[in-house]
Length: 388
Image (tube, rainbow, N blue to C red; front, top):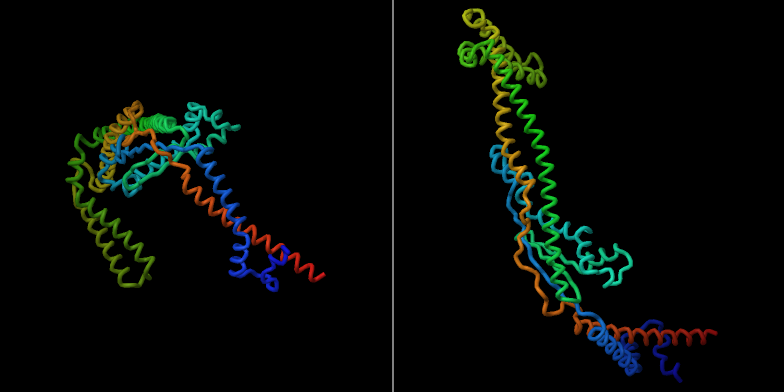
């Protein structure tokens, strides 16, 4: 009798919509009973068994402004271009927020929370790694808004007071670790700049000694005397060097019989003749032979330039050196708290009504599938019986 009642469209192995509706109508009482059982179980679980989870949230803001050595660099190097082009300015907010997130996610930071609130025993963890992973993935939530430079730090816990205290402790540890990293970085910067500072002092002293020796040989102010005597020859020799470089380039691009090459060669020869004429016609016995003066000018200018360069380097490094010593000793707070964590008044999860509806619907669907499979199994046995 049962097999005859369940035999629907037995000549066709596939199910149609009418077959599904027929199966549902024949078994609707059992389907509703199973669905009701699933609904009642889900209500008991979500309303009386599962813990309610509360979330406490705090918001912190990135400083997003240059300070310390970076501020000194940006303010003291106007001639080398904006540091924003090197990714220092515009992306600083994102980098700072990323650093905050890495610190909050670090095992060092989370260990403090786990030990302080005794989560190993409270949550019955067997391994410390499991506690760290669970807190990082399930309890801690971090969201960032790079445009405004704000980070939201949230903790989920079944005790709303504990959730608030955990967020407070996280922010305290974040500031503490960030200060330590800043001090360590400042110390490394100070040691590097200190070495460069003392090197610059030695280089400046050496340059000044070389310039002093040159002045003892050629006069107290040889730059004025030599420049006055050798300006023309020096300019011509500089022009000659430039034209010779130009000729070398032309020879690589053109053949030797090209008009451009010939004209450039003639120009160089003309410059050589002018220089030779000046050197042979000028009498500088009172000071120095003009034939040597361009080399003396170059030597003096190089020495003078080296002194000026080392002086500028020292003037640049000295403020950085002093700033680095200040940064190394600085232990001021490094984060700006906009909203302090609060004790949640409403639960965050589970969404009890939503979950009951979803599970009930799933129970209804699963019940239908169960009776469809039952019908297919009976049909399969009937077909096998006919074949035998």
